[in-house]
Image (cartoon, rainbow, N blue to C red; front, side):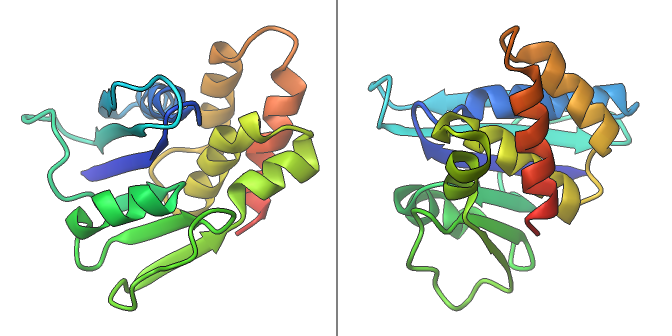
Length: 173
């Protein structure tokens, strides 16, 4: 079983990213549960999306100690970092996260938002870049299932840019 927490600020698309990750896991034949929470502000407040992925039945739908934490902002790392398992995987968006405590054992710093802006032309693709990074660093979901889940969820006319964002994240690691 793998517990994943995607965290950042409202407006970064992390709720959608969690839904896509869960749908890709289901397409890969796994069990998955997705939940979310965000501050009262629509944009700018803290936001998190949690996904549990397992080969067996999932008995409890909440993430307690994530195996993987994606922190898209410094505030998200500060708030949710302490919950990460001791040997958990921390992926930070180095565009916004500058201060990473030394006690984290597995840290991957990827300029997720900057890559989205440089390669795809807009920061709004950062959530899909992050999913590509997660796919490369874990065996949680296959890239093919993830791409299909992305393409099924993104607005019509943005499929090629989202495909590029996913590949950008996958290749950035």
